[in-house]
Amino acid sequence: MNDWHRIFTQNVLVPPHPQRARQPWKESTAFQCVLKWLDGPVIRQGVLEVLSEVECHLRVSFFDVTYRHFFGRTWKTTVKPTKRPPSRIVFNEPLYFHTSLNHPHIVAVVEVVAEGKKRDGSLQTLSCGFGILRIFSNQPDSPISASQDKRLRLYHGTPRALLHPLLQDPAEQNRHMTLIENCSLQYTLKPHPALEPAFHLLPENLLVSGLQQIPGLLPAHGESGDALRKPRLQKPITGHLDDLFFTLYPSLEKFEEELLELHVQDHFQEGCGPLDGGPLEILERRLRVGVHNGLGFVQRPQVVVLVPEMDVALTRSASFSRKVVSSSKTSSGSQALVLRSRLRLPEMVGHPAFAVIFQLEYVFSSPAGVDGNAASVTSLSNLACMHMVRWAVWNPLLEADSGRVTLPLQGGIQPNPSHCLVYKVPSASMSSEEVKQVESGTLRFQFSLGSEEHLDAPTEAVSGPKVERRPSRKPPTSPSNGKIGNEQTCKPRRELCVPLGSSW
Image 1 (cartoon, rainbow, N blue to C red):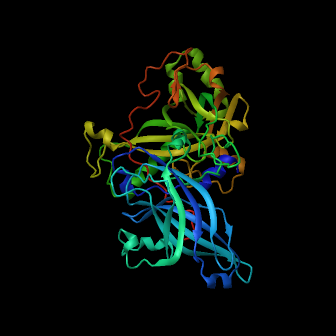
Image 2 (cartoon, one colour):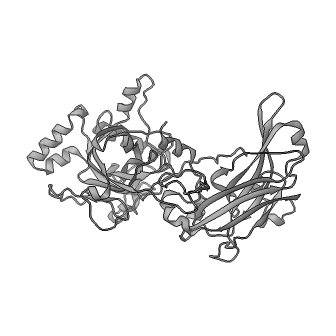
Image 3 (cartoon, rainbow, N blue to C red):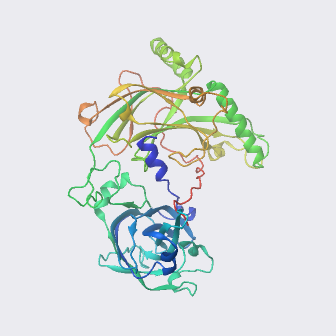
């Protein structure tokens, strides 16, 4: 497992409640929270008597009080040893995050967890209490700005108690909540504008430690090791991708034929009735390309349109047709999907966790409505839907500065950077690993990497990925080629439900 896969699998986030996504968008605000020390006998004497080598740590999670919904990913402090009798446990760990969910019902839940060995030598983890850390005040658009120390009161039980319907807000005043006497957590919480230049490297609602290495940031100066207190960005590298070819198994025609058949079957199983208005159609074959640092996409992925290489051969000159035929000999005669333009990625960074993500999507349109009646021409766009069928990941640091790359395409139920459902892969239980990679499809392209000043790039500042036309070729006349500007016809993708990384 390379660095990208390791970081990606360890930082999968649970999205906020869907109702929050429907609210007006607000700018994200950055925060620094320092968890200083824990005072009082929060670990009960009975636990200390039953377990040996008892240690303690804190866990922090986001919670939406309105919808009783945990989201993000649970963050853990380093483990600290405990003494008998229990005394102050010092953590002094900086915690950073940014969020656009500026609402008083968005809180952070801090849990005190003890772990130790039982008599049989096995490890046991126990929840010793929790507190509710208010991030935003009750006044709209007024985050907590005071940087002085605060004391967080702790309650008996586990954070799962917040899911009970009897615990209405404010939960701290609920009669079912019992305070732990003489116990509190000392902390500070304040806005941290210095984090804003690194927003593109950190997804919203991701809790990270200042001691954690963030792909794309330089190490911190001094002995503190806190790289997020004053983030310093690594120098970007520009990459160019040319001659992209997607080969699908067993052939493009058979792959799309099966895809359409299964889509029609889903239509019937969902009770939508027959397609009276006509057959299901493929409107476009799209490719999303973006740079990902394991935590999230560094910039919004660009979207381009792929076309069958036979269509390219019919619309190009004879010399260009010969080039397409010669370059596709390795596809065993099966037709491929190709990209007519060059891709430019100016946001690459020389870090093992930076990778380029390719996502192959199909846009379908059915001329029949939900009730089975034929749809009018004006409503055809409203019936369009999009599905991801394959994806691939490429780490440029594993290759030379230029050359040709062949990647296996992935599909099925495995996690992917967009966290959406992906079309199945062929059943290959009897196949070798080499055959399995071919059966899922392959992606081939030519690449070149280098610093911005060493490549033929425009001098103006670049805010995101762009598509470049090759100057030696005539631009195509088809309006479906190039970058997609409007995707309003696509339905929202279905999110995969991923549990929090917690033992609650």
